[in-house]
Image (cartoon, rainbow, N blue to C red; front, side):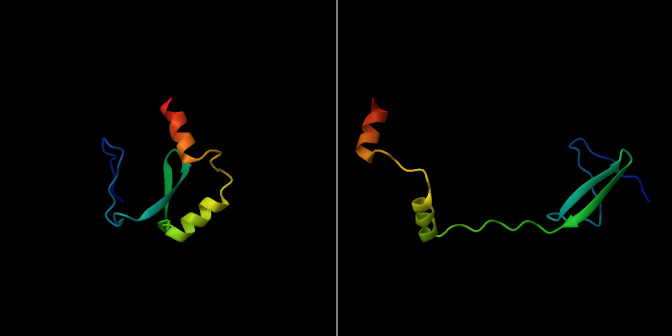
Length: 76
């Protein structure tokens, strides 16, 4: 086994790891660190227009004024 040096950015390079893979670190002791490959978290799906409107309707936050009154209040 060869020694690996950490660079100025705090990064190490291992030949058998590929960019983009996700690893979980487990610090066992001051001299031992374990890397475990984990599934890459899936990207959150974007809401459709209909889903966004439904979420707005279900939201407990609602305007208490109409747009004209709100605009007048913010202009003062």
